[in-house]
Length: 207
Image 1 (cartoon, rainbow, N blue to C red):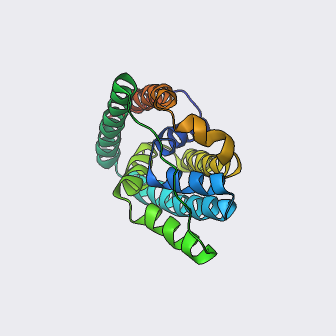
Image 2 (image 1 turned 45 degrees about the vertical axis):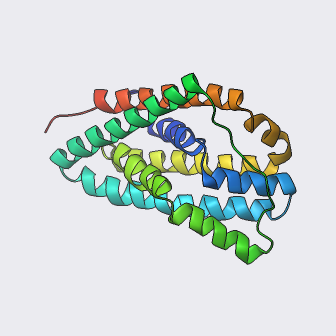
C-alpha cells in the first residue's frame, strides 16, 4: 500500500478501524433499526470522530512530521499497533463468535442521543487510540497536502459508515448480528490493517 494515494490510504484505514465492532456502531445501528433519531445519532458520532481524527492528523501527525526521528518512531509504533489490530482481527475471523448486538431501545430524546454519542466517542479509550494515536501516527510521514488528503479520506470513511448504518439499519442489523458475517469482515479488516502497516514501513525514510 506504500504507493497508494494518501486519500485512498486514509479511506481504507478509516474504514478498517471504524467497521470493527464497538459501542458507536451498536448505538447508531440500534437507532437505525428503530428509526428514532437515527440521522442525529450518526451525525453526532461522525462529528466526534471528525474532531478526534483532525486532532490526530493535524496535531499528533503534524507534531511528528517536523522531526525525522519522531516520524520514524511514530511510524514504527503506528505500524506495530496496526499489526496487532490486524492479527487480532484475523484471529477473530479464525475463531469466530463475535456478533454485533443491537437489541434494546435507543435513547428517547435528541439530547439523550447526543449525550450518549459523546460518551461512546470521547470517553472510549479504543476510539481515542484509533483516531488520535493510530490515524495520527499513520499520517506522520506525509507532506502537508498529503496529510490533508489523508485526513479527508479518514473523515469520509467515518461519515459514510455511520450514515450507512443509520439509513440501512433495518437491512443491515440481521446480517451484522450473524457471527459468520463478522468472520468475513474481520478477515478483510485484518488483511487491510496488515497491508497498511507494511505500506507504512516500506515508506519509511531513515533520519
